[in-house]
Amino acid sequence: MSASTIENDFKQAMRRLATTIALVTSGTGDKWTGMAATALTSVTADPPTILVAVNRSTSLSPVLSEHRQFCVNLLSERHRELVSLFSGPTKGSARFQHGSWYASDEGLPVLSDSVASLICTVITTLEVATHTLFIGQVSHVANHPTIDPLIWVDGRFASAAQLA
Image (cartoon, rainbow, N blue to C red; front, side):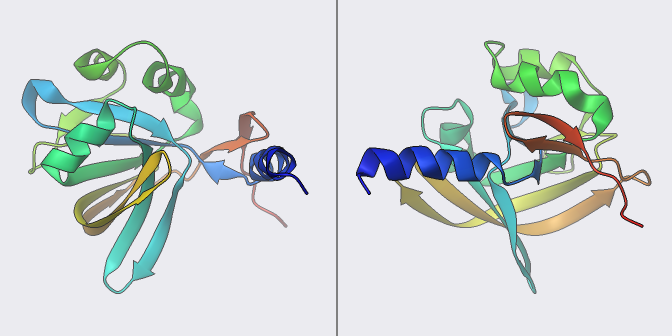
């Protein structure tokens, strides 16, 4: 297989990987920033750690590299409009004028009604091609009582349903 064939087939395969959409946020005060993300995963439960892949061309990347703390806000059906806001032309603190946000004890932006929010401190990074993998140790978790994750699969929104 040629490199371009593998790349195209890989992209098609990854479109089939259903995942919860998250808003990864960082910064403090009037310097909040964030992005919509699907490239994240838990790494270990002991200690609790999470991995987030961030393209170095995003506004979040230099803030995360400097600030070394972030919040992963797992989105719900009720947050669809935030996805385009956090992945579109609106930048910086203007993104946080929508939704119900508060500052964590660390000053990080937390979406108050997310399915779950995880406060993390970067413990290591790894550069891979155009992205930096930020691995963060989780110091605080807030879980919402309603579990209705906003799913991204094949380039569009989907919702999760309990199987019988």
